[in-house]
Image (cartoon, rainbow, N blue to C red):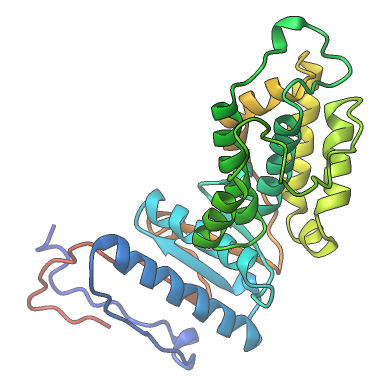
Length: 297
């Protein structure tokens, strides 16, 4: 194979010779995880700069060697959008698909649903009357569940993991005999729960701001569809839905249409033959080998 391509040089086509451009390479030290974090952060900064310069999100592609790299890039961009209100708003599509449970808006909705269940451990929807679904929780179970839920709620609200954990730990300092004392009022506590669909709709109307609703409507709609399908299969109570969600539902893939405000993320292999104005490879940690007697253009 090397003999066949020994004298081959990649040329730039005549139609593209007048195009200007540049290649920027930044070396990152530390462990693989630390280098990847630096690469993802620089990628996010450069994407923001390019969009501010006039590029559409559809002009930009993020490439990764494998699914780990592409998933890391998606997670970082979603987290950046959730934590920084000034960061550009664009949708992300990937050949690997995005799981509905990774949406910050969906995480917030699920977190509120879990908080409702924790505020009244026997809470069920009107159609759930089976006594086998009702059980009492120990104080330790309630405190631990609330700690996890408060942490997830904080992260979904755009807090850093450290700040969310600190706030959750502060809220978990409860009296030994009454886990409901000294906790702030739950804005969702007064919600009536005739069925899961209505509950989700009311949570969306109460907790999701218009900007997030517009930006993440694909994920929110997917969640609503999953809730309706679950209810149609006979699963109508909140506890059973959340159990199914953690095990299966949150991993449901979401398809997204191509538009000017959508940014593509894909593997290098799947990008062959495609063309984008801006290309990012945030993680390049593989051995490129040694090239001899060749010209690289």
